[in-house]
Image (cartoon, rainbow, N blue to C red):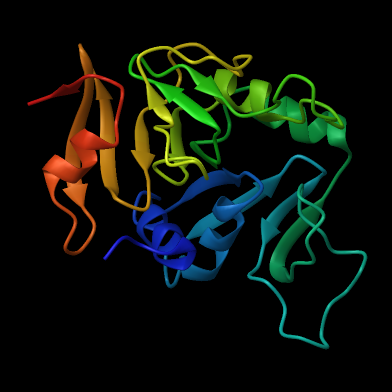
Length: 208
């Protein structure tokens, strides 16, 4: 069966290396905080928080502790707070090892579109453009197709780009794919999902 949101987040957590600073985007990526386990991972948020804990239990929420997606989170003994300018200096200065982001489209060459759909109200581009330009590894977590069943892994993105050639690995509800020379390579399939199903639901070139 395809992975659900939590299973996708748990799989994404496997991409994180001990002793690194990591930024989680809004949507499914925020769930990754719940699956870090014993790894020494420090989560960073654009709004000025370094060292985010998992989501709080119901009734224990602190409205002053939020991530970039305005969801309540918890702090840790090592948590540090600072202004947004310092936060973005960390990102632009290459101090963040990896970013796990959601996406609306990813192209076979690693182009990423995840900040707006023309004609729809958007509050702003957020920190995604800085993240994909400044971090060492970009992992995208998203559904393989849109609500209409159309592929989201494309030969070329149709939506405004967040960054060009920036995506390294894609984790969808169907499996894991890497951006390689010539297109995308299937690394892993979700349980009972076949490589052929992934190929059938992908517009981008799949290379062996």
